[in-house]
Image (cartoon, rainbow, N blue to C red; front, side):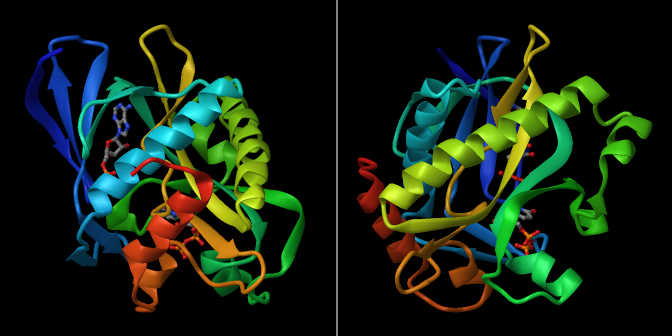
Length: 237
Ligand code: ADP
Ligand code: UDP
């Protein structure tokens, strides 16, 4: 496999073409952004930690029957993935109230959601990633009803698998965001990343925040918390 030119530079990762039309290289950078890219800082080791964290989680999900983009780790900061035609919709599953749900509905942070909730946001920083519903996805052609049904099915499967994984590590999976894409064979595949940048994880006993909210809320020790989560899960760093 040969790494070729940069295809896209996002807020936290850079995406490169390869000599295989069906494969891309994802490079995890140390850039850390919040508030739709309005605040960006460099955090030492973040690229490495998130790359290895993501590899570990994607392999667990694949083993549990969730089709993922992950192919293999290439270096501390890079992995090889399936090239997907990304669906510009963020799927968010919540088990406890936090973040934008608390702001939107005025409910108490930490309230148990029974059952979990499933929400959709349009991936569009310029518009502030607006909240949308399933009919918008189909009406505006971001995805078909069948693709959406599969994305929801897979999101709930991810919640089941990872809820247990984190619980065993003494952590509550509060909420998380997933992005899906269409592979060359037409199937829906989990893309982007799963790391503490895109989910909320609280210590079960102390409720300490162990995710990107430490950055958003200026709590400090951001990467130290990511590393502790990785260590509790047994992610080799
Ligand atoms: P953002 O675009 O939100 O700033 P990143 O910095 O993480 O995010 O950039 C990664 C970009 O690569 C995102 O736009 C994401 O949708 C896209 N992407 C992630 N995985 C794949 C994939 N397997 N195939 C194609 N594009 C992908
Ligand atoms: N999330 C994300 N990227 C986004 C928006 C949200 O990874 O562009 C994640 C976020 O980290 C959290 C979950 O999705 O785990 C739900 O986020 P929420 O809607 O509460 O928004 P926030 O307040 O985090 O912006």
